[in-house]
Length: 247
Image 1 (cartoon, rainbow, N blue to C red):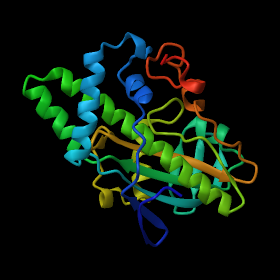
Image 2 (cartoon, rainbow, N blue to C red):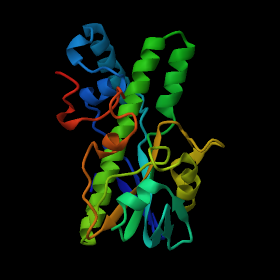
Image 3 (cartoon, rainbow, N blue to C red):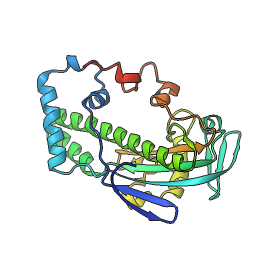
């Protein structure tokens, strides 16, 4: 289990003070850069400076809340949970047909980095703003990976496997299902709310579901990118060993 401060209320667990691995290859991937060798030295130096500023100014406040619920029914495009919450999406019923439980996770890096990005852009420092925004996206990626590891640990304790994560707004899982997820997890406890569009505020947040079960196909990194409609053209896609980013 990743290091952090953990508190439980009913069946919901809140985790804070999570260590995030801000790998430069992942940062460049989030900047849409495929080859590190093509990046000018002054850009890499600025990224280093921004990473120091993030630590000095405590711009990251990573936290997540999650709940694991029994699955009561799976049919057609519907997945029903014991709390009378029904999720819709063909990818859920096809990929999670063997799942016995469902982990629902909402996480965020907090609003501070996002505010600093806005300040940079408004203060005529667009390069700093764009680079910091990419670092924030890489931080959310790291947060999601740590959450997946935590759920895998929880699954192992139950004698289960954990599936790949599925997020509202991705292929086969409509963004409108975000509202159902927020019925299960008290996202307000970690400072996350939904806008009318179904998008999360702060923007640098993530939500996902993960299936648990004895016969569930174990998670593989990059699977979400592989099943996405934009998998062949997306600059931000993940590939094995990050081979699309050269050192």
